[in-house]
Image (tube, rainbow, N blue to C red; front, side, top):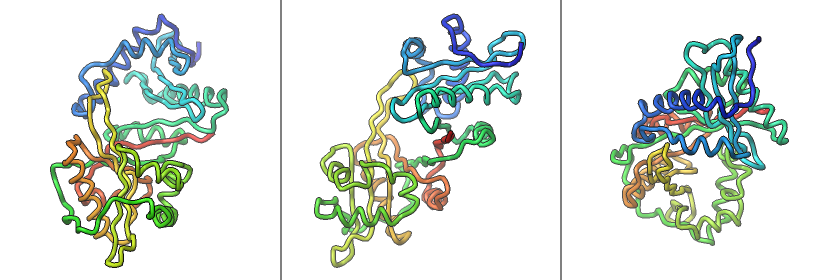
Length: 301
């Protein structure tokens, strides 16, 4: 019997749970502030019966389960690899690549052009593996400790955006190539309708910095995410900077500090920013005290 991958069966559930618990423990050991101390087994068992999820297991020559892939069909868009785990004794033997091949085949069945996943920055071994199988980074999420400030106090000429600002905001955003690589297809960020909606939504913020003539010179776009305790991840309120467009580092500093103070004001647990993985802003945000939290990756068929 050769190494192979098959769709998981109900009888595989004890091994699936064991491996997912080991993976969950690794995440808890590194980020106990983000992850609860126990795995939500009920959710996994429910998803096993849900057609939007699929579980695959890799098998060795003697029929033992060596690893698992826990996949989700983000219907209409792509296959998302929620979890991938190979037992330590079997790593480096090709099982991870076989499991990702199952994700690829499901994506083909659904007519998608990609499958995607996310991973925490502390897991650098995983990054090396994903790159070897042909995956590319799509975004980097950096995290700030909002109790610490390394930026200059924001000036008084930062204000909430208004409907009359939409045209100028769109022109600024579209002038930035890194922004368009990440968000160019998002109606919620670059269209007149999407930005107008952002001005009305309580969980979104759009702010502008202006010069002495009230001309817009920089833009801050953020969203407030509130995560409930789902049995795996801890409850949290997060201010997530979707984008800052600024011509100078000083303007950028002002808007970062404005966002940080806003996060403190509304009792957020942390602040995050997403950037393109090749963006020089990664080093810039690190100088302001941010650290790399996670990356998104994609495999294009």
